[in-house]
Amino acid sequence: MGRTKKVGSTGRYGARYGSTIRKRVRQIEEKSKISYRCPICFKPTFIRAGLGIWTCKTCGEKRTGGAWEPTTSAGKSMSRRITRISEALKENA
Image (cartoon, rainbow, N blue to C red):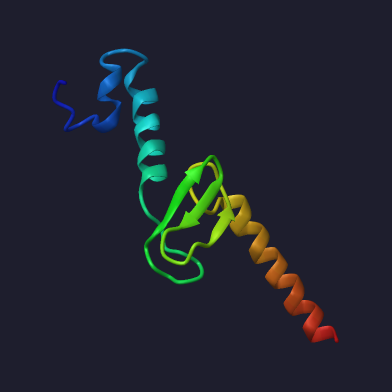
């Protein structure tokens, strides 16, 4: 295997497919491989089990999320909207 200090896991593609596409693939692979903080036990053991499936190795919590990250920007936006709406309903009641 050649040197892959700069290109990381995408070194397996060699000079094929262009540098920009290989950089994007590297970013996606790095996002999906790291451990995130579990929303229940708050330990950094929340890992990707499959496409959009995230599990905690410590507490066994299993959740759905984004394909490469546990939360997506659209999901964060929706949770903010839901919180804002529920607070407005509490004030009116």
